[in-house]
Length: 294
Image 1 (cartoon, helix red, strand yellow):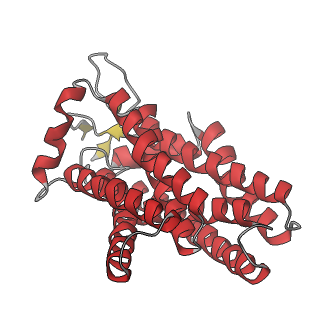
Image 2: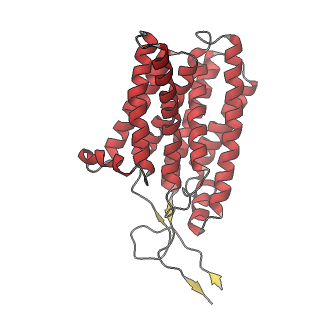
Image 3: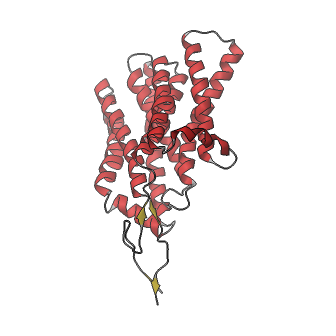
């Protein structure tokens, strides 16, 4: 049996791959703000950086919901999203976001003007940090539970989500903390951490693309769109060259200065948002009918 090679088709009555068009740039930015915001908050809380916690909280608790509301067709029904905790990662994500928003706010206020007992302070801190990780990882699980789109249907997606969130968080902490609240030893530790995260992110990204190639014909087509065809002029320069290679080379070989750290931060954030936008654009459905000839 010789299987037919399908083409990308739009709304035409023709057999082939079709792009998903339900999730666009609004969801991509919501994922971006959620991951980077909670990552920035997480590492800022570890080092006691109040301004970083505030900025991270605003990104995850304000900018992320705004992007989601821009996507919703019926914003007044958003409350229904939390009704399926047992079977929906979207509901679990709303749950984590609510906890992060509330406990993160309390932690910021208590850190600036202590008013809680030591036990309550520790409790709020732990719940906030767990909520940060929950927000980061749920975004990946939302996509991985999408069997209709083989590109997204990967167990590596939650890992990528956490890695990009932590990478963005460490990058921003190092940028804002250089010559301020970070000691030279702490700055070196964060730099090494960031290099390790870049390496793990690159390996996970390659594993993700390799796995998607063999999930199904639509997964294979999506990977080709990213690496060889329609989206390659964006994916390879923005995500691979700028987001991974350029940032890691500057971090390893570049002199530690505010200018270099700013360039690294911009490069990594470009790679992050670029990946999210292109994942949505390259997501394709399998052909509705099989077509082969004997």
